[in-house]
Image (tube, rainbow, N blue to C red; front, side):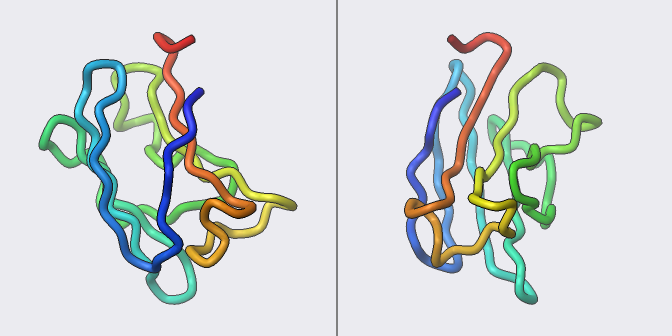
Length: 98
């Protein structure tokens, strides 16, 4: 499992290379919730998926291996940009990672 830095802003895009794969996540505020677009090696896996506390961001139907992201929160609070990197963190995990 690896923690990935988020900004405390309502809309952001980050690109990170993990397990030799290029990931791009766009996290946005939308109607009182946070949503995410996820690209893997320049191909969309999901667009506009709702981010739920402590749950995988990418639905399993869109994955070919055990790699995913989640936002961990305290007390199962819904992810919200004002709490990013204080009591909410983005994590990545992979079956291949240590």
